[in-house]
Image (tube, rainbow, N blue to C red; front, side, top):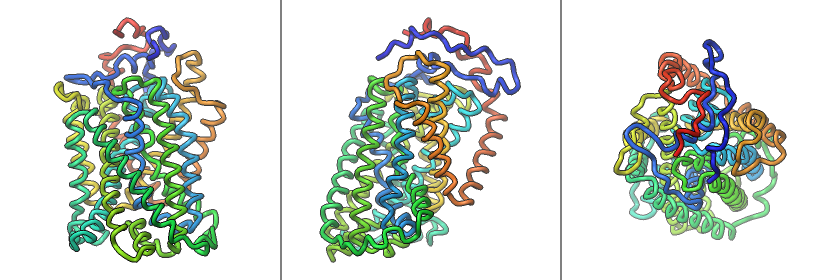
Length: 497
């Protein structure tokens, strides 16, 4: 692990008030020195590079390909494969930026912490709001999709499905989505057992879902018809772009490894590798599955299907065995997404709480398990209720816009840190800077413009509510305000052990 103690404190003068107070930055050395420490206990460094990679794949590979594909194909037609590539390129530029910052600032807060160190407290708070959308709301969105495949599995095995009143939220023909709530509570139970234990469970589930997708490709490949690929782009580039913006939801989670910066054994080396490796594996699987799916079934038949891949296998084989087997894999796959993403959300709130911007309860660590127990329970309760009451489409778009905004800030943070701290030790250096992070920033903004107006309205309301909370609570309780943390002029090398 690189020795951060040798790096001198960032040359940020102490703020005097007003705008300067809102833009005050938290030195990288302070972020590193505080790593792992919470109220009443400390997070434990127990995760290897392989487990970090599995956390990112676990958080990414799931609902996007098993569920959201059915909503994207009617927008793009067979060119949905191009939509996946566009979304993947957008993710790649941001992944490179994440890799550099994760190897430089190994803190639990992910892009929230990176923004705090480079652009100041107010921008960090805005980024934190985006991350709550990215992680907290996506847990709910993923959980909604889990119920669809659970019904598919139940129908194929015992011929029974849950009634719509208990398996769909209001607005989708139901009253309360019970399966969505149950899978969140399932993930919560594993997380309360400890990071290493939940990482082992996640690794097993990731291998199951990769196997399920490879099985789908092998079986559905036998039904491919060349005519299903024509016309390749029936709705034009506008449809491809719109589908790409929605499918960006499928890549949300590759940055989950960065939220484990304080629980990784060797964060400077392993975090960049885990982020890049997970994105590569996920992108290859997405493009392969999408190409086979639209080749085996006419794209028009995907309209309104939330269990699209099971439907493709049923069309190709004419019986239920393979769809049921896929549904079993999807139930495991989507549960692993809930587990990994819920983990990321709790660690982000842990970092924000330690900084005083949200209540201290979120940074209390159980001394026996080394986990933020109260944080995990509160987040799971919020996400579970949200999943049980809100339709999938609205949740997916809200998640995408929050993620794209956070990714845009990460690309800016790389440029800023290169200029302000050029000699700082970095476990990974993004090539062609500032060109690549600038492209990442531009791609994020472009995809944000492709999202519906209603999503922007929801995003604006969320930001407004978050800023009100910051000025009423966070600004007053910030550790940089109360001086309970180290000040920006303090040499943190004396505090590190």
